[in-house]
Length: 96
Image (cartoon, rainbow, N blue to C red; front, top):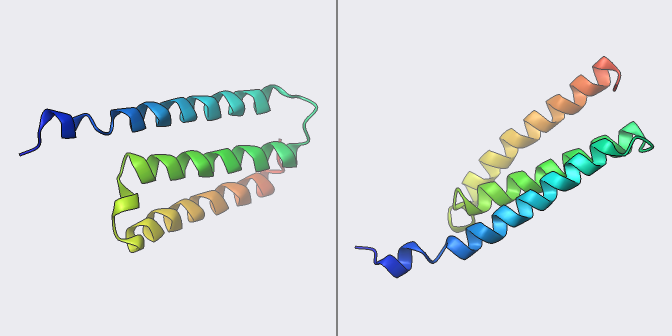
């Protein structure tokens, strides 16, 4: 059985992750608000932050950092396909 202490061991980690995700979300909004930023740089910054946020959530909340590396590859493989599809759609539509 798990004790009360074991149950709350991850709380500081979750709080740190929440703060990091909040900072990244604020940075995303800031990138969107900067109108002088070229489109390619804005997309690059937003996709980069999306990758970091996805990696944090998958590693910590889904506990993949403790699991088989094949599962991590499966998750990031799907994310890579979704990211490539997004980039292709942006290119086909013509950006903004």
